[in-house]
Length: 447
Image (cartoon, rainbow, N blue to C red):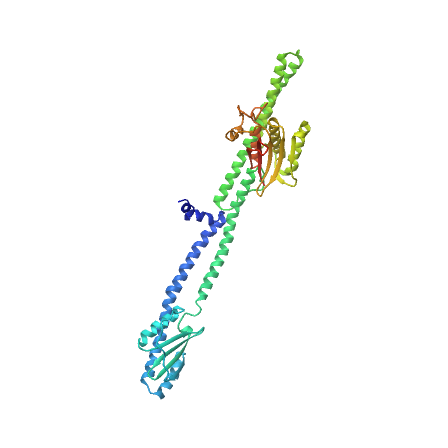
């Protein structure tokens, strides 16, 4: 049953069918045209051409029967004159071989419909008891018939038996179809191009790249889809901007009273209570910074071409300067150029490296370039995360209570911010088992 399910015509058709709109539209045009040509060719050659050939063969057979009757019923002297006259009028070459005969026919497979038609019609006209033979040449047919005292040979032009050059019909039909197909491809390409341009614009916007020169054009339906995309893009950009501005304003408004409280505490006599309050204020400021980073998301930063290896290497070097140089290993090739939002991507990589240092003794950062994606791996040798907890660890404002604590000293936004930035570039953040024994965090970016 499994083998039969794999061989279903529907699945096989899906595999061989083109995936693009242009290819499928082209098949919609070619398939009916090919089917129409096949039907017309069948009707022409198997029906109309066969009927016409038999009618023309019947005329030649009637001429042969008439000449046989003349040979059997007139004396030799008159037969010669009549034979010459018939050759001029019928445009046949006629020769007579006295005393010759024709061997009985054998059942031979005919090479063409014309030979078969001639055999059948001549047999019907002259009778089944009289022997005859038909052979074909490129331009003529050679017909030999027994008469009462010999054999009459007839050389008949081919155009008297069959339609001349029937292949010209196929040539004209195929040529006209190819011309129409070329015109259809030209117009179809112009109709598909706006859809492809819309798809590229949507893909670029999904990767966080600017699409400043996109304008709707093409058919009415395509224009409507393009205009809907522009409207959606404006709404998303306005929403992101309003969210960022709101959180920035809230952060600024909250930091002002926190700063006043910090100053008042600094002027008070040191005590366990003031130290606790100072630590709480510092924690609140860190929380506000993380909230603001999470709210920024894509922010207003524009994507620009950058060397991904150099960017990650600079982030790792900055982290190593804080005293973790011996614990950090880099496997970072250069020359991987991508259009990215550099500040956002730095924050993403920084969050992952900081998270790895919190839970592992050694951290390894590497870069792999594939055919369609570039992957930045951050590996540690810590306790790792259970597979069923990895998706939960990526949720915003969420901290794991058991095992590895992903956001020690934070509010549960480090990995969420990193995934938000990766998705803003059209990529993804993946958590898997590290070859070093701990957690592997992978930033996957489209090339």
